[in-house]
Length: 226
Image 1 (cartoon, rainbow, N blue to C red):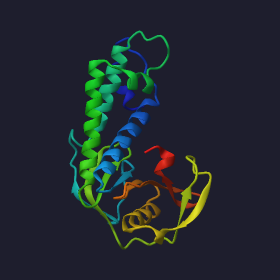
Image 2 (cartoon, one colour):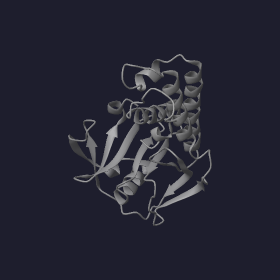
Image 3 (cartoon, rainbow, N blue to C red):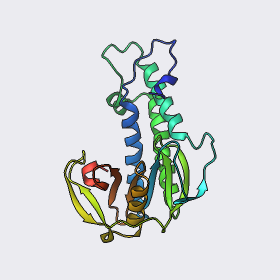
Image 4 (cartoon, one colour):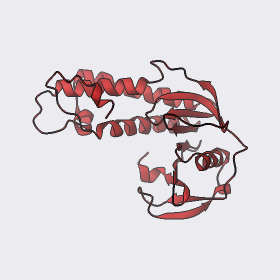
């Protein structure tokens, strides 16, 4: 909604579907994961709240200062929304959203979609450095090469979700996973607002989050369509 507010209100532009921002973000992350899997170096992406707390559990080796580069995705997203709203001015069939964007052959949209592709490559490239890529949940780059403290309290059990909603869960042993996964499990357990995507070198992808009723839950990539 905040990005939508940046659309110029003095033009009779089309209305943008509020769900479009979420779908575009998912599109960027799918592209990023696809690139990382194709390069077979694995990687970890951590998504922090806008004002994260940190007691030293996460050390970011290469932090990003506030700059246009840090918010590159947001800038591209707003440009896409502005362009969609402008070129579809007078659109009488309701909201302009993901379907319109994904099917558009307009040169301006094609150029912006290339910029989205470049953002995916940027994220994938940063994740190739040893350590995790750290983003805010608005996909602003916080830094990369982040190391999760080995002093975090280990956990014995995590939960595997059998559906997208996390309503069907089965227990799993944390020790069954490699170092990358176990460190993420500990971090998410310590900071329940942190969300993570872990890509193994063999291309396996897991989405990890905290659920209040159970604790650390992971979702398999086949279910998420990654």
